[in-house]
Each structure stands twice: as structure tokens, then as C-alpha cells.
Length: 405
Ligand SMILES: *Cc1c(COP(=O)(O)O)cnc(C)c1O
Image (cartoon, rainbow, N blue to C red; front, top):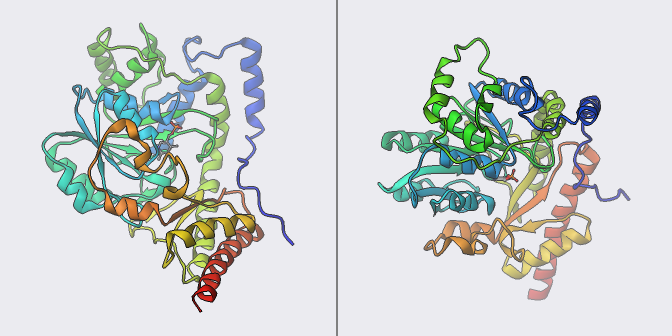
């Protein structure tokens, strides 16, 4: 019998990182602003901006820090309401609270995406910004969201932490809103353990974010300007904000940048393999009458490294039995709403106060399963996972029909 695949280990970091890390260890040059120019963090920012096809990138200590700085860079007054999806990671409402703003949750449907009717209803006059969390890399309807937000002049921040490599009508997710935020935490496509980056084309947004991330005095001069661009827009923006903003010190270290940079050339392969693996397992799972993997939206080309699916026609008891049966067969599944203290279930965000009913999200969270599917898995491992999940659902439903006789 094949052993259950290990779905927890990340890919090894490319060998090329070693020489650079060794050089940094020799010189002790770990702080991004020690070198007068071309520090690894500054080079990473330039490479990431070029990869995304945007003017500016700012590397910081996490995606959560990037989201926080995005709201700060938008200069939102204290207690501004920020619309966010009710299905996301606890760090997202936390970043809103951290920025002295008030999160307002918008309902989500059973395909894990923003419920556009509820979005339209909640995009009231007092909403000062929107964060769209493309949770687990599922892209919400960016055409409808941008049309509504542009019409009202509300800035959109994309939480693309789990969407690096995802396309929408061929455009890169994270570059459609005013600001896009990504994560370099170990479960994401580029792994530095911790880290994040924000991207934008707006010189004032980036200048404000750079300063507040901890570019004290004239350290902003060590950030690289876009290739072939006149840098005066950016310099003028920095001059406008000099000494006017607090320093939150959420910088990235050179060591982290040295770990990330050699992974950038691996990204395309990771994205291709991740999508192939996901769709292979999704097709198999969809043959089960008890499992439904929601389809991608038509404009969307996904970049998954995990799979989400809904249990169909199962009671709460059967859903629990399914998790246990899958585990017995060697595959760990979390049903977001049934896992005690799950950080993706909004009722566990007790720090944000009562949000009123969120019926679509609640229903989804009680049947939506989450299984890791690292891009490095090979076909026999994918077969093992798909077959274990299908058999676990059949175990539960066969038992149920026997009990009913
Ligand atoms: C991982 C993740 C975050 C948080 O990223 P950090 O870098 O750990 O702060 C936020 N939102 C989503 C959708 C994520 O997947």
C-alpha cells in the first residue's frame, strides 16, 4: 500500500540562496538600509514589481503588515469602516483594527467568493475602503467589485496573500485594485517563513507606506525607482510626506529577501503544477455524489496549492464522521466551521463585535473542507488523496444507509 503523502513540508529553497546567505552572514549586512544601494530587499522589490508589471513594490514583515500599511497609506480617518469578506483569515480583520478602522463583514457564497448582492447592499456612503481577500486563492468577481467601487470612489485593496500567479481576464491578481498585498509565509507560493509585499502604481501610496514601514530620515532614497522611469513623481511624493508620518518599523530583513529572490524563477512552474494538481484531484472528487468542488469563475485562471470542496447531502454528524474517516485513510481535512477555534471562522473573531447575520458564510463554513495540496505532489500521491476522500465519503454514507434500514 502507498503511504499517505506528506502534505506539510514545503519545497526545498533553491541552492542559489546559500551563497548569498553565506555572504550576508560573513558581512553581517542583514539590515535593508545598511548598504548605500542594491540591498537584497531593494532588489527583491524591483524584481517583484517587474514580475507583477507595476511601478512600485514595498517588501515588509508580513502580508498582515502590508494590509495595515495599505490602510494607513490611504490616509483613512480613525473609525473609517472597511468592508471585508466574512470568509478570510483572522489576520485580515485584525489589520483593519490595527489601522484604527472598523471591519464590516460581507457575506460569502458556497463557492467561497464575495456575495455580490450583500456587497452592493453594504457598500454604503460610510465605507471608506474595501479589502478583497481572495481566500485560498478563490477570486471574487473583480469586474463587479471594481465597477461598484470606482463609481463611488472607494479604494480597493486586494489581499492576494494566497493568489500569487492567479489571473483575471489575463491580468495579474493583486494589480487590479489600488493596492495588492502578498505573503511570503511558508504556506504561500514564495516561502521565506515570514514576509510580505505590497504593490501599487500610486506614488503617494507607496511613499507613505515606505516611510511608515520604517524608512526613517532619507532611507527612502535606497528604494529603487521603476526601470526607465523618471523618478521625480516618487521623489516629490517622498518630499511631501517627509517627517509627517509615524514609523511602524515593519521592514523585511536581507536574509528573507535572499531566501525569496531565487524562488521567483520557480514561480511559473509552481503555478502550473499547482493548477494541474488541483484540477486533477477536483475532477476525481466531482465523481462522488457527496462532494462538490466549485468551478473557477470564467475570467479566472487559478494558482492553487490546496483544495476546497463542499460536502453534499451530509448532516453535521456525517460531516464529522467524514473528517474522521478521511483521517483514518491518511488524509487530513478541516471543515472550517467545525474545527474548534478555527481562525477562518468569523465567529471566532470576537474582537470585532457583532456583525449581524451572515447566512451564506455560516452555511458554507459548516460543509466546506480544506485539504493541503502542495504543488510538489506527484500523480500517485494525488490519486491517494482523491481516492481516500471519495472512499471516506462513501464510508460515511454507506454506514448512514445501513443505519436507516
Ligand atoms: C496567509 C494569509 C494572510 C496573512 O499573511 P501573513 O503574511 O501571514 O501575515 C492574509 N490573508 C490571506 C488570504 C492569507 O492566505
